Image 1 (spheres, protein in one colour):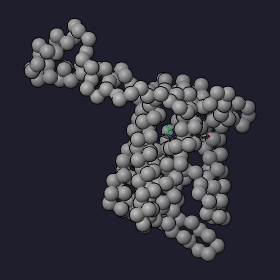
Image 2: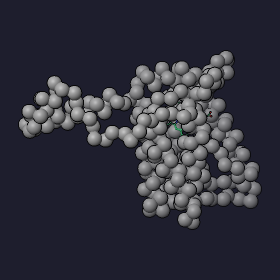
Image 3: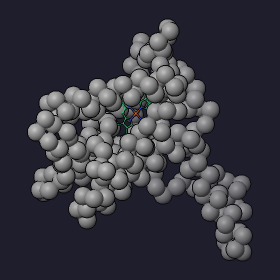
Image 4: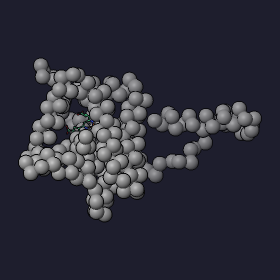
Amino acid sequence: MSDIRSRKPFAICAGLVALGVLTTTCSSSKSTSAPRPPTELWGELKPVVSVKELMRDMLDPASDYVFESVKTQVTKDGVIETEPKTDADWEKVRIGAVTLAEGAYLLKIPRPFAPPGDENNSAGPNASELSPAQIKAKLEADLVLWNAKIEALRNVGLEVLEIVKKRDAKELWDAGENLDQACESCHLIYWYPGDKALLEKLDRDLEKHSRRQGDGAPGRGTPGQPPK
Ligand code: HEC
């Protein structure tokens, strides 16, 4: 990441050289060290938790504010549709959107993938998840891809923020699907790339779904489906 940032001033200079301006400034800065970028961070970024805990304790609950705001529940008394209506309803959606949009970048801070000693479900015949070491190796092999997945999540956060401004519940249905997509497309690469894992996930979703039908308890990370 710092690599990219430190290359920027040079790229700008190169652009200016191409335009035929400021040639002397740029060529002289080549020999000395590059000037400090004006957008210096306010402080050092130090992680507190692993990726797994950041998911469990921050990004997943934040996404529920969005997923739970629009949903269809089939109960024995009929179909119940939920959409944000009151100020308080929209406030929750906004909290979710801001937490996701800002929180996504916390995934750029190098941190362990799981707490010490937690190897995920990565060993034995029923292994369905990659181990933290395998996830790390995947990420390090292609940082651009990891960052693209982070941007994709951030973009959905921004999309939801715009929807909150317009209070457009219809668009929120689509955004919920985009959010699910942003989460799952990263998980399918880094967390559970196998088919088996996908089946297990479908099982989990089904289980969540039936739990929702029963008592309406909030599920985790699965959007309600828009009415067809
Ligand atoms: C940039 C990639 C990425 C994105 C985007 C992402 N995740 Fe994750 N997530 C991971 C990885 C990697 C793990 C597995 C970490 C581990 O177990 O070592 C994970 C694990 C999880 C877990 C498991 C936590 C636990 O305690 O077992 C949950 C829940 C989760 N993610 C929810 C979400 C939700 C909801 C979203 C979207 C709002 C999301 N994630 C977006 C990469 C991502």
